[in-house]
Image (cartoon, rainbow, N blue to C red; front, side, top):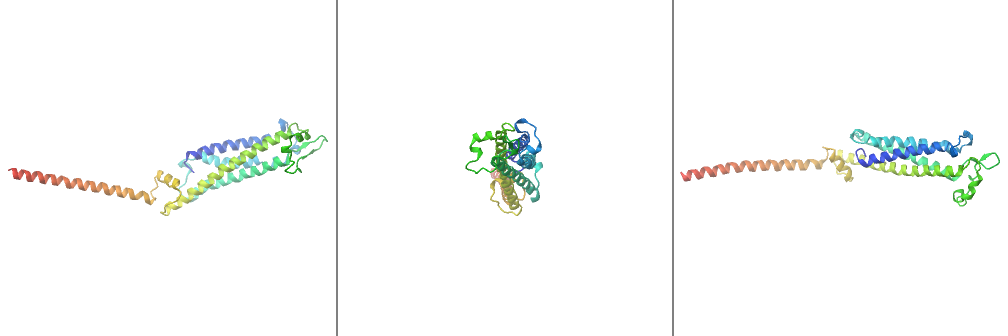
Length: 249
């Protein structure tokens, strides 16, 4: 989770999605590019699901993933749990954005139907006759102009962003928990089931892995054995040469 190149790409994607979520939430305050009074803006916009949920709460784990490398890792278990907690934070923020965006799509915008009073004309619609599947009813909202299309596009965008962020952050939670489990197995001298994490630990030069010591001792024994054999051959050749000289003389 710390040094994989894939984690860096995930961090870049999460940062891009978080920025898009903040921009989308900001546009909801200006329906059709108009500046309205706060009382005439859809109430669910004030839940800051794009700013806070899919924005800031996701940016923190995204920056952590971008930092990556060994500088962002810690040797002890608490350090390995820290990225997991940040990924959980991002998951919670993304799910929060999904919930509020879904409610915003179902309830519809806050608009003027022609009477001069702002109301929610689609809030009591059933799922079967919902305005989302009946586009001709969008003409009920006269002010602000194109407010229904504005809300549908932006809330749908935030919904999609929240779903993608939730999947990415949840994958980092699973990856981080696997790293914690494998690190615990390695420190206890056991062989972990996470082969990928074991290979990563060996690549880092872990000296506590019991499997790493056996080949070294075996190689050392072979080297000593070859030296002894070489040392034993040299005297035998000298003896043979000496005996040959004695017989010849």
